[in-house]
Length: 477
Image (cartoon, rainbow, N blue to C red; front, side, top):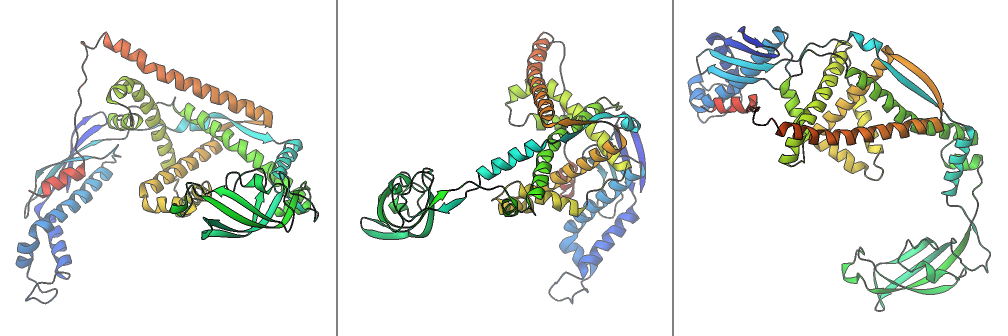
């Protein structure tokens, strides 16, 4: 294989690749040897089909596969030998090709720019630690206790009142006929919440243990037996017990019911939980400060093809007119994002940062835990969508890079209270909202300015084809 760089225009390069006839024939021989042992043709033993027969039967398909493989192998090698990292998919233009012929083609590629990352060590950012007051921990535990249902048995003669828990068995009928799902044992109902059937609770107010009570209610729209929807049902209820609400005691037993060793351990866990809630948000602020500083780094040139792709993503879901109005602003945002991405990626490569399969699966499990009750659906989503898993890999990769930058950079460590943390986060949200509103107004100003000079300037657009489409088209000739 011979490779020559024909022209250089900044980041855009054309590489001429020449593969001699002998090399092409070697690839063809290897492919025929490969299929010879797998082809079954009438009149020939496996592995004994003559080359000429195989060529007549499968020649076009074999050459098409060989061409695709040679293009992939040689184009990758040509870029690696010339130390060119492509920004996007290279485009191939075939000049000479065919069976028993040399192969000649051109690779048109936009190269990733050289990135200088030495100054990353000088990045400054705020690193927060939130000091949680014991009063905040006690307050959170009291809130948890209020939401923990706790009841004690009422006296034998006590009548059920609102907020009491009634335990009962029931059999239900519609038009005096029993129906599927019309029975229940030891059903628990907190009076006043109206969670069973509309108006059901109120009819149990005043019952006592051992009472029989007929309750009437309309079956709802989502009732499984569709022929009974909106019909009146009679519920013959036998009251098993009445329980009065009881104050939850915050002690070691309460802590154990929540999974802690004792009350002291629970307080420690809750304190950490509160700290983590603020830490995650404050860590995002630190990350944003780092990314903002990286935006000021110098990159020789931003590849236009990457800018165009990012603008497409930013304008997804917009009308053509709105996308056109916002184009200049989107390009500005795109260039910042790409610059930051290039610098982070270069830093990751130089520090040999990798994402292990274990780390990736850990992130998948984290996403699953964030959707309680829908675990199977989330797992199925990731199993059926490799692109979603790839996106998660990118998230983990970026986080590892940011964490390493934090280790190398110069943090301004601050210990703050919970109130100070809330104030900082609130101010950050306000600044973010103000910036978003400012960005939304930018395109309108630019469009006005553009109208006055639209007759003086024109933009040209060009269409490009991917290498996959191009090689498929050529191989069919």
